[in-house]
Length: 90
Figure 1 (cartoon, rainbow, N blue to C red):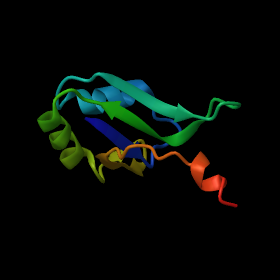
Figure 2 (spheres, one colour; figure 1 turned 90 degrees about the horizontal axis):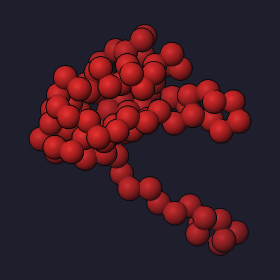
Figure 3 (spheres, one colour; figure 1 turned 135 degrees about the vertical axis):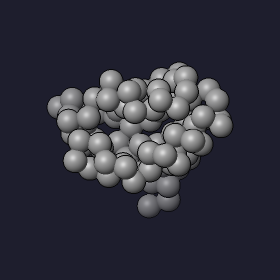
Figure 4 (cartoon, rainbow, N blue to C red; figure 1 turned 60 degrees about the vertical axis):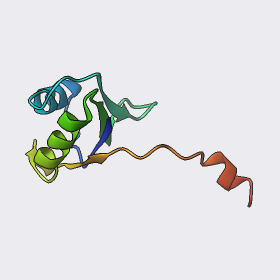
């Protein structure tokens, strides 16, 4: 399951997310989204967990918990929509 993790402090690293989520099971990947030009965190990321039951436990346990001074927003990631088709209407 792909998990969205939002409201991240700019100080949070991928290792911090690995440590938090690995308590609930195996991780496939951890990715903090960064600005292409500056390399600065955009304040959100994704954690991929192969076991849906473990992922659900992690979401339930970590949502609204504090990490480096900010309360996390943790939920199942929604599939990305193609925004380019929206722009063609204007």
